[in-house]
Structure formats: C-alpha cells, structure tokens
Length: 303
Length: 306
Image (cartoon, rainbow over all chains, first blue to last red; front, side, top):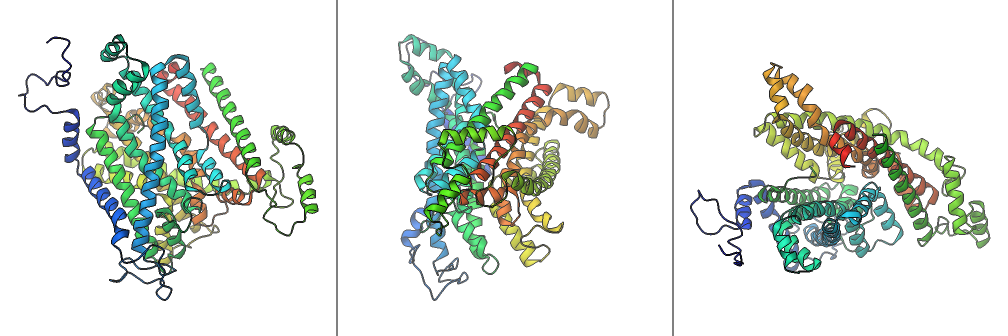
C-alpha cells in the first residue's frame, strides 16, 4: 500500500483470520463491551433517569423548591407530596431534584476544572520531559502529600462560602491524579512512529499534542473523568454536610442529608430519601467508570 | 538506600515548611479575626488582647516568632480557650481520635484483607461478586450517609447503642464500624487486585508443586506480594482515618481533634488551626515517608526509579 494513503481504516488493520466485516472502530468495540457489562448498563440507565428527573422534574412539579406550606410541615410521604415535606412545609421531592441539579452541576463543573488543569499539566510534563518534567512531577508529588481536605475546609470557612470558590477549591484538589495519568500516557504515545512522522512534516508542538497525542489517549482520560465526578460530588457533599458547601436558599444533596440527619429521629424520610438518591448516583457513576475502564481496556494504575 | 531515605526526608521537611508558611499567611490575610465575634470588646481591650498575643507586631516578626517557638515544640496559646495552650488541647483531644482510628483501622484491615483475598481465590463466584459489590458500595456511599443511617437503625429504632457521646465501650462500636467500613472497601478492592496478579505468577506454581497446602500458599507466599498495593494505600489512609473523622466526630459528638479543628476554624482560633494543620501535615508526611521506605525495601524497582 502506498505510504501516502491517509485513510483511517488502513491505520488499523483487522486480524487476517477474521472475516472482514464492517470496519469496527475502537469506540464501537468498546461500546459493545460496555453494553455487555450489566452493572455499567444499570449505572447508565440510572444516571439518565436521575439527570432527566433533576433537569425537568422541577419544571413540571406543582411546587417550587422554596414554596412553603407552613400548615403542612413534616408531612410524611403521600399522594400530595410523594416524598413528604420538610420543617417549612417544602416539598421534599422538588428540593431533592433541585438539589440534584446543584450536586450534579458542581460535580460536572469542578471535574471540568480538574480535567483542564490535569490534562494540560500532564501533557506538557510528559511531552517535553527532561528537567521540566522532573520539576513538574516533584511538585505534584509534594502537593499529593499536603492535607488538602484541610485546606479546602479552611478556604470555605474563611472566604465566605461562595460556589465559584467551591469549584476552584475542589478542582484544585482533584487534578493531581489526572495529571499523573495523562503524563504517563503521553510519554508512551510520543515515542510512537506516527508522532515522528508528524514531527518530520514540520508540525509544531501544540499541533502534535492536541491533534495527534491527545486523541490517542482519550480512553484513559474518559475513564478517569468518569471516576472523578463521584469523587468531586463526594467532596462537595462532605463540605455541605459540615455546613461549608452550598448555602441556603440553594440546596444540594449534601445539604439535604445534613438537614435530614438533624431531624431523623422523628422524620426519618428526610434523611432516607436524599441518602438513597445520592448513594445511588455515586454508585452508578462508579459502576459506569469501572465498566468504561474494562471496555476501553485501560490498565489501572491506581487501584 | 540511605540516600533515598535522606532525599525523601528532606522533601517532606520542605513540604511541611511550605504548609506551615502557607497556612500562617492565609490565616492572617482572611477577613475577620479571633476577637471580632465578641461584640462587647472595646477598642482598648482589643488592643490589649492583641498585644497580649503578639498580634500587634509586624507580620514578619510574628512569623519568625512562631517558627522560633515551633522549633522548640511550642505551638503557642489558644486564642479562644483562655489559659490553655495548643499543646494542651492537642494532647487532650488526640488520644480520643487515635483510639477511634485504631479501632476503625483494625476493623478495616481484617475485613478488607480477608474479603479481598477470598474474592481473589474464589474469583467469579458469588463470594467474589458479594465482595465486589461491598467494595463498590463502600467507596460510593460516604460516611455521612452510613453514619446517620446506622444511628437511625441501631440506636434509635433498636436502642442497642447511644446515638452519640463518647463514654462507655459501647459508644465506640458505631463510630468505629462506620469509619472502618469506609476504609475496608478500598482495602478489599486493592487486596483482590494485588492477589489476582500474584496468584498467576511462577513462584506460586512452584510453591504448589512443592506440595504446600492451599492455605499456606495463600498466607505465606501470595499475601506478601499481593498486599503491596494495600501498603501504598495505607500511608494516606491512616492519616485519612484521622482527617476523615471530622464527619464521624461531628455525627457522634466525639471530643476528638477532628471536631476541634472544624470548630477552631469557625472560631478563627489561629494558633489552634495552625497547630492542628501542622499535626495533620506532619502525620501524613511521616506516614508517606514510612510507606516509601517500606516499598523501596520490599521492591527494588521503586528504589532504582527514585
């Protein structure tokens, strides 16, 4: 075959002894493997339902999340209020769905912060190597050994608990692992021949990193992004539980669990429902992340 | 080996110094001070208070003074508890957290390692699936969910335990279980992964071929290698069992150092916050150092890479 052919199919020859059917891409194969994983499918389904419910539920509900019925406080679950009401007579279901928007939103945004920093940092460190890499990775090592939970707590206590700061603080903690993973992947890929080919064509560093290396390490990045989301949501809920995260009148699952735990003796459903949906969501995200790891055949370097 | 230990030690010291410096200046630059909450304080009294604690001196002077007394092991007086030093408070609260941590860690190790090992040697059976589900649940469901739910079930409904407090031995049970479960889960996953890798290796086949019993193969030969990932995890985990107990100590009203830290941050008790941060950071770094050394000792590859 002439070397000039840029056809993407030619780059991935199928094994000779298998009948050549439709070109199965790496992603298609991964999707098939993922679909066979029952737990991952369960996770995807649950996440889809939770996400849709949180997005649209509050719109079709007859109640607002701040709407109080002061003559109907602490109502137990009924047809009128499916999950009951809280101390101000607010509908728990609406608060749960609305809080879900915040929890999922924080999870996605802070993960995005972590992803951006981690990928950029890891790619630069792995691509350029040498002294720069040594310094950058030593820095990560040192940061790993810092008691970050404590810093996040201090940040939230001292600098008013605003939600932007929450993203930054959580993102700043969670990018370290991503940076390490991206670095090791970049180091492996940059030695391959097609990178050399790209270099010999005179492409700049930036183009090589973004157009040639990163697309080839998308698998691990996707897997660890999926696994970072539950970690981030956990941290947000942890802070909210300590009263340091999302502040009223906004609520999140962490806030609802905290409120529920205070009232659980007489009104256990105020704790049980938020705890259930929060745990279920995290479990689903972890199942999906694990499934993706198997499907994309990412060697685990962490656990 | 000595060079390796020295370099890691110096690195830890540098990191610790950075933590102290960063925390010190962060505390001084935040809005509000330890005495702003007390409204009755007149400007004069405030000046006296600040002079008493050395807060009227220039910042660099305060910093150097602090480092000087820290070098002698003195963490200074508390701003909120009159007539008490940070050293006294820490000495008072740490044993409580340490007791809870030790109980939880023992539970986590016993449960985690045995579940992980069982799952590995009975791979793809119901034991494996049960252990994996447990592992995943333990990772996904946080202590601040498990804690209140267990209290609801065992303290409020069944009445076996007190819902909170730290007096008799029975009061240790629920907190230790909640904290222990949270760490048993990742330990079981790591053990399973490590054991699966080791059980396929040649030296295990050799041991079997020599006629060693299955029990002996697992406990004597496989566990040694299989537990390597667990050891790496234990460094941050042991420190985390103390830091993670912020939540546990809050839920169960345990007078430990975790709760004290959160309170001191709310109270802006600068010296107590700083003292606790130093304690945690020092602990984490010391444990990481120990883990690094143990790993280098067990696995020559690590030593050569460093």
